[in-house]
Image (cartoon, rainbow, N blue to C red; front, top):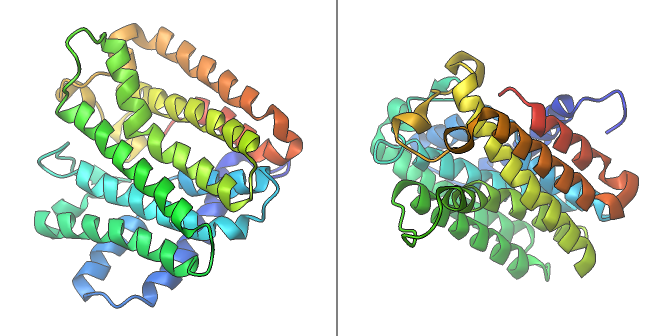
Length: 295
């Protein structure tokens, strides 16, 4: 990323690369026509593609070639999309809009939404195994993605079917939810990218620290946007957390303290990138952009 490129423009460029890669790979995978249509609706239906961006640029930050991380970036985006499809289901958030379009269960029915989500999860690991068939990294990457997927599901359980020890304070509960439900895949994105780039342990630890802070910041901003922006601006229904009586930062500490937490996590994320110098500039700029995004 050079000085004349905004993070938003660079995100769009990354999205185009990853989507073309996904489309090519999926074209070679036999699927029923209706399932293919359902997957295309959700997988190519918009989104910032923050996770693939993190994967490719984390790879570059540690000295690797971003193309080496494309299979990991694509697999991760399929897992992320699976999570959104299932999160939108009537038994979960019962959402009607995603990226300004009908959610999959609204468009194609609940059965297809469940099956398409299941397929995306399996296809993610199939892609990794296919594109890294001869690589010693295959098991490590699959392990990273499996752990992150399960941590994300743990976060969803904590969010929708909470089972915390009674003495756990509300803010501690909320941070646990966010670090699992949202943070797990963001952390995985950076770690898989760094692993593809051949990161030594110290570099992997620094990238992980960046990802953990950026992941929490990302979700706190989401909490803020849910109460400050319109559905037209976000492309999805707003005030859903309040309607479902879910914990959020604004509900617990107010908007001012939530914005202060965003700034604190941003500074933590940026500090973690110090060892990488100019190679981490795209990750740095993304950190700044995520803190002030409006959708």
